[in-house]
Structures are given as structure tokens and as C-alpha cells.
Image (tube, rainbow, N blue to C red; front, side, top):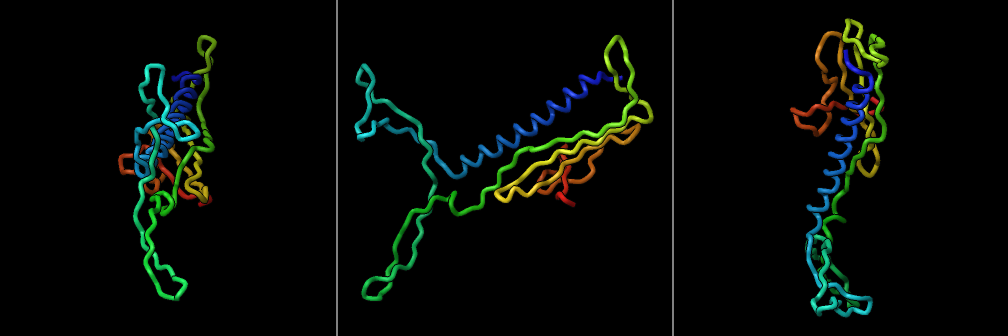
Length: 177
């Protein structure tokens, strides 16, 4: 027997942890495309700010990583010259961020009231299916993660999610399938 409240709390905590992991992955994108740099803090007129003791104030800023690109430019006389421009890397790649948008739990348990608390039985009829829907990328194309417990067995993955490592505890398929 397991407490219904404990079961729901565990499922809720797992969804929150999965969403936190997705958000951490999204924030890690910043490390790929920006460099954290410390610079002198300036006011709106461009003057360096100092504290009461005359020490220059510092601030952290994110500087975009960039590449130098050359492109042909036609001059007024019709000749071509190469012009150079620094292009931030983040503008050259499609960004795909993820977040959990919906979680659905379908369960079939034997239920008992023990000491005024609802308990879930682990009898032969006990089974559950959890579906987590997430939208991925700029197109917000959805995917579904599913984990199920067939009667009298351990949780089993229904399908492997694209891009997830083999040891992952999540499963997914495109939705709609």
C-alpha cells in the first residue's frame, strides 16, 4: 500500500525536476553563444561610475560570440570588393528550447481508506500511465513522453525519446503520432 498523497507528490516532484532540467539545458545555451565579461560600469553619458571611495564600479555583461564573415559588395563603379562583418553565432543557428506544457496521469488502482488516509493498493489491477506533453523549438512542435506500470511489474518505458540517452528514464513519441 502507498499513500495516495505520497504518490501524487512524487509524480508532481518528478515533473517539476524534469522541467527544471529542461530549463537548465535552455540556460546552458547562453554559454555556447555568449562570453561572460566584467567591464567598467558607465552612466548614460558614458562616464565610468565610481563608488564613495573612488573605486571603479564593475558589472558583468554577456558578449555574443561572433564570427568574421566576408561578403561581396558592389561599388559605385561596378567592381566587387569584400566587406567584413562580425556576425553573432546565435543569429546563425535555429534555437530549440523546451518546456513541459502538460502532464496527464491515468491510473487504475485498488483504493482503501486506512487510518483516515486514502491508500493505493498494489493488487493485480494496479496500473498507471503518465503522459507528459512538451513543446520543443521555435515551431513549438509537441512531443509526448510516456511511462507506464503494467500490472505486477516494474515501470516500463513505452518508447525512447528522440535525442535522449539510452539510460534516460523518459520515453517519447511525436504527437500527434
